Every structure is written in structure tokens, then in C-alpha cells.
Length: 151
Image (cartoon, rainbow, N blue to C red; front, side, top):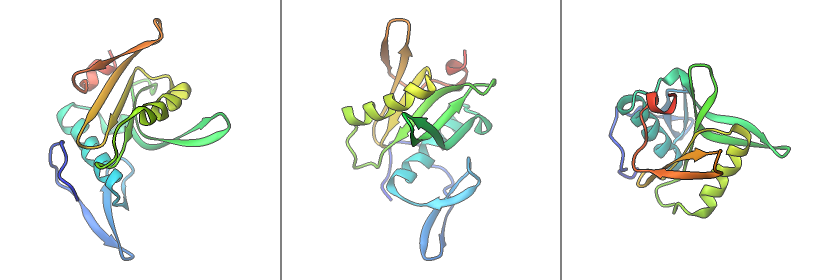
């Protein structure tokens, strides 16, 4: 798999039924190793190890109902009262982050109404803080630590 613009970690990869799988610590199981999953696992470990996000307040593949259709957020981060505070959308490293990706995560946010939206393809990472009062958002220079997103 491709080297990412994220810290390395002790990756657990295995072969199951002829397929390569990677350990997802948040789901406590092995999942198919796709380029997008490679990005997700690296990004989750970055949040856990570098920015002090608690694993118990993060979830992968969170189902939502958007206009009668089932959708899944790649990762959702919750505060200590279990309110969603951040949605993270991952793309494979070769996928360009464009308006369509921002539109996708914005649609998910119609349901969850979080304060932070993050998009990463493992090479580039974008984070914006929502301002619902002024119906706008601000791009941040870095991904905030957990204590900042829950303040």
C-alpha cells in the first residue's frame, strides 16, 4: 500500500479466506484492506495517538438516514454526552478531493449537524469548523485536538 502523509503505526494485516484484511480497532474486527480503508486506519490512529481522541467516543461506518436513504459516515467522533461533533470522510490516495466530496460530507451533516467536517485521502487533509449562526464555515490549518472539538 501507498505511503501516506500520516504517521506510521503498528499495522495488523492478515489473510482471511484469500483476501487481505486490516484490523479496525474501533470495530474490533478485521475488514477488507482497500485503499480507502488504508487511509481510514492511518487517520484513526493519528487521531488516537497524536490528538488524544478517545477510541470509545469514535465509530466507523455510522449509519444515517438521509431523505429516506441509508448512508454511512466513514467515522464519527462524539463528545462525552454522545453528541456527534465531527464527521470524517475518507477517500483513496488517488482520489482528488473536490466539490463532490465536500457535497457528500455536507449532505451527511444535514442529519448529524456536527461542528467539524474532515476529509482526507491520506495525502491531503481538510478540516472546517461549521458556523451555523452565520450559515458559513472556516477552514482550519490543522485537525484540532479532541479537547478543542468538545469545548
